[in-house]
Length: 207
Ligand code: IMP
Ligand code: MG
Image (cartoon, rainbow, N blue to C red; front, side, top):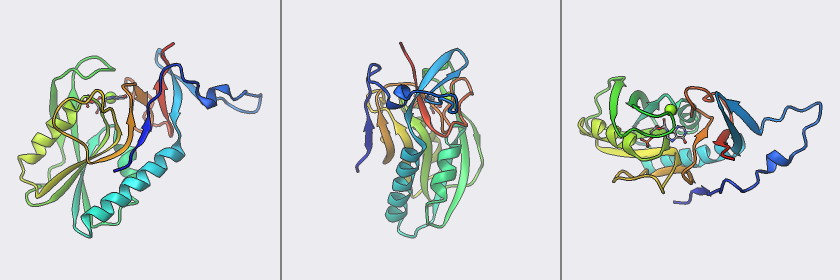
């Protein structure tokens, strides 16, 4: 499967950052959330294109069969809303929440399921919708939880995937973007709960 790669070094210039602002424009290529600055990395158009591609792949692969989409809260709410409107399969939707405790920008290694909206998945085709797979610990915990319900099949779709960090055996089948180990916000992803409503995706500005 072809995925977009956005392997950027911190030094690589961002085109938007060099656009001269004038009195009539607001420069949205650099934003501040809490104590940190972020630069635009992926535009809303690139996201929409990737989401449409994933929706088309899923629609084709499930070939008219009914699918249960399990949306991972909170970060996947925009991804799921956009993807599901492009999927032309009979489907139902459930929500699950996993929490990992620890630092704001790193997985702590301890993940627990705090909410699941309840449908029994026995004999169903299930697709997990994730915003980002970083170490993979969260999605692995979710897979274990859902597999206990004996679904007929279980696949993972994630908008962002950090292959260099992901440790473990759970590989996402549908990937929007592969990224290097950077911290990103926007389109559902947060930095200490801010930034989820941004239409574009931004990367932590390290210098
Ligand atoms: P994991 O390391 O794959 O278990 O990722 C755990 C969770 O950390 C994800 O579901 C996100 O909520 C969060 N996370 C990981 N990487 C990022 C990032 O780059 N930006 C914002 N949140 C992230
Ligand atoms: Mg988070």
